[in-house]
Each structure stands twice: as C-alpha cells, then as structure tokens.
Amino acid sequence: MRRVLVLGGTGWLGREIAQRAVAEGAEVTCLARGDSGSVPDAAHLVRSDRLSAHAYDGVIGEWDDVIELSHDPRFVGPALDALASRVAHWTLVSSVSVYSRNDEPDADESAAVVEPRDTSEHADAKVAAERSSLEHLGDRLLVARPGLIVGSGDPSDRFGYWPARFSRSGPVLAPTTADRFVQAIDVSDLAAWIERAGRDRLSGAVNVVGEVIPLAAFLHAAAEVAGYDGEVVELSDEALLAHDVHYWAGPRSLPLWLPLSDAAFAQRSGAAYLASGGIRRSLHETLSRVHADELARGIDRERRSGLTAVDERAILRAGR
Image 1: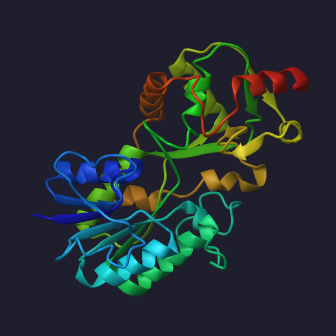
Image 2 (image 1 turned 30 degrees about the vertical axis):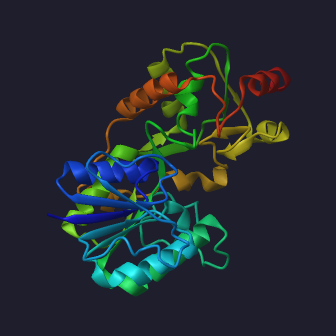
C-alpha cells in the first residue's frame, strides 16, 4: 500500500489532498498541530509542532510521497532534512506568484522567477522553498505552482465574494472589465492532480492553472448562477483607488481585481498541466458549488475579502 505523508492535512487544500489519497487507496498520514480542523476519515493524524526539534519523530519509515504545503523556511528546511532521504517522491505546493513579471500573457514554467532576497515576502519564500527542495531532492521533486485556488470552503473569501454579492439585491460595484481576466483552479481538481502526480512520480515545475476567462464573462456567469438580473456599475481604477478600494483580496477590496499592468498574472500557460492529465471542470460547475457554499455559510457574514454592503453603497453614491 502506498504511504503518503501530508505536511498539513487539516486545512482547506491539505485536507482535500488527504481525502483524495485515501479515496485512491493510500495509507495517509497528516502531520499537523490539528488546529485547523480534522483529518479525513481513514487518515491518521500525527499531532506535531513543526517548530519543535522532534517534529518528525512520529513519522518514521519510508514514504512514497510527501506533500509539503508550507513555504515558511522554518518548516521547509527541517522537513527536508528529516524526510528527504526516505521518500520516493516529494510534492511542493508553490504558486504562480513566484514569477517576476505579470505582463507576459501565456508565459509558461520557463519564465523568470523572483530572487528570494526577503523570505518574509510570499513570492520570495516560495522561490526559496523551491530551490531548497530541489537541492535536497533533484528529480524526485514536483513543484506545483497553482494560480488562484477556489472552491467550497475557501478561507480567503475572494472568489466566493462575487456569487455571494450577486445573491443580494441592489446595484453591484465592479471594476472596469476590459482587458481583465480571471484564471482559477478548483481545489478539487488541484487535489486530484497532486495525488495522481505523486502516484505517477511526476517531476519538474508545473503551472496548475484554470482556463483564462475574461472578467466580464466571469461576472456574468456569477450573476447567472446567483439569479441576479440587476445593474452592474463599473468604476475606473482611479475612482476605486480614490475611495480606498484595494486590489485582489483582503478587507475593503474588490476581489480578483488586478492592475492592468499585472493582467497576465491571470493568463498563465496551463499547457503542461493539461498535458500531464490535469482536468478543468467548467466555470459554471465551480461557481454553482461555491454559490451553494456561500448560501450555507451566510452571504451577509463578515468576510476576509470584499466590500461590506455599507461601503459598497457609499462608493456607488459618491462615484456616480
């Protein structure tokens, strides 16, 4: 029986990967503090603080695949030191944020990455993790570089903001959509690919990204799924920034909105992912699942990303 170790496994993506591996018949162990939730049924949880000197004492023996979800150098290095010599294959979950330029549509895995000068920065830490892992593992390493990960239970609240917002009444505030795109990978598709790539011992770097969708088409699809037929008001970047609306994510943001200079961040080549057997479920299916999840969690709940109803109405009144 394949032995799979997930460094994590109780959080969103990690649990999805562990569940997929269990479904495929693997013996799955998740090493985590266990604060983020539970492991899937039939998976084994080893509770451990990865900052401890004895963090990996409970995961003895040989492993067919290790999946590393962290980019924190305090975790990545010690895990490699403890486990690299006794694993057949290692998957590091990195990110397309490692690339140094976001103005090259359809750029693939050969594009230049940032130099990791400050590992407190997300992209720098991801590149440092990639390089350290490659040094320890060579051709036993798969570097998965996902784009925007979406799906039910997404803790970031980015993608789900839009079907949730279209589930409420009143004019919807949006950025100008011309020359803007959304490129998302469903968490279930990502987890399925990571599990199978481990079985197949795929190596190298792969952009795990979804189809490139024009932002206007994405908003239309989100409105359709939510049954919204009201007005969508587009404001310019200048107007939104003047009202202290933020790009991409976080409080007081319009999620998935990027500066036009960074539009290619959502236009990465996914050719290698597709060639390696990756699948992309339809946008409609993902939006439908996310919409149902948003309704269950409450569309008026406090969110990590997006505008509150009060802020949105105030900006619309001032911006018209």
